[in-house]
Length: 111
Length: 114
Image (cartoon, rainbow over all chains, first blue to last red; front, side):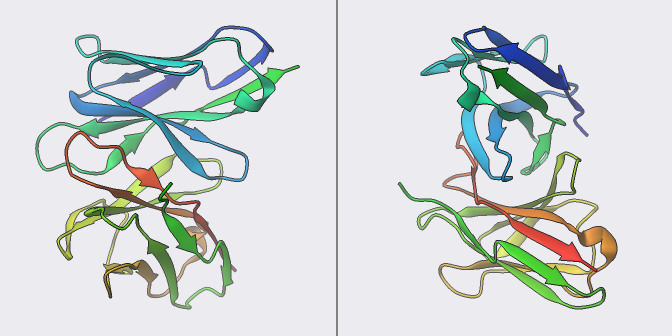
């Protein structure tokens, strides 16, 4: 069973700052998801990656399969980026299908 | 853009009552999922469904839970006799194919059991 850990748990930063959220997992995976959860509770998928790096606007996600580690970066952060960011692992092999979630990083960007 | 929808958005029920949570996945998707999130805790996998049968379920998904795809569009989660600890946000998700595809989440149903 995969253990997914995120750090930090809470992060408060000023508008414009570069943000990094980290995720590590214990067992080999086929893919890792980064998700965003807003205060109302809805979940939006930001990235799914299995190697290397992906970029979408001001968001960048990287993954190092050997080190079982992924990072989510936000450049030029803005108050509207305030949300909970969650990483979730899709285990490889064995017919595993559901995602294993981290506890989330609660990000607040202050103007 | 196609999206996953869920109804109702909120439901309050008495302990012991049956509830049915409904989801309409994205129309051409083949894999369907239910997750739950107890307030203040992480999201947990409940069940995955493909080709009209359960493909995987977690230890949370006991005999009180069942899933069904009664027609070509709806995907339902039934809780037969609700307990206080079933109070949570329930998310439906769908995916086009099994490998290499993003899961798309619905907005969730907030269930409160009194």
